[in-house]
Length: 134
Image (cartoon, rainbow, N blue to C red; front, side, top):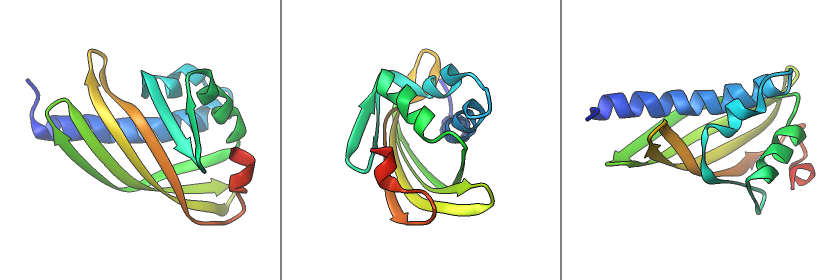
């Protein structure tokens, strides 16, 4: 049995792995590393579009070249489920492309914590066109 501190730490690492893996993919990294942050039936919602399965791979292609920074994470754990909230800063080159609010649900799996649902809401625009990611 893990402690609350251990669970929160593993979920925090999941948040960072989610951001770093999609950025590594855009420079030749393994897409599977990002997809592995989701449960098998996990979903990602942005700008009203919900993606699952192979649609997640297309999303990764659409955001290639952007850099994702997750800040101010809040994690609430209840047994084998957790809610996660964080601010997502998106950079395109050196320019701040967008500021998003990310809300997620995570579940404990045999392989560790994974996201079952991620919802990203644009809070401030920039150089990244949200409509291009629908």
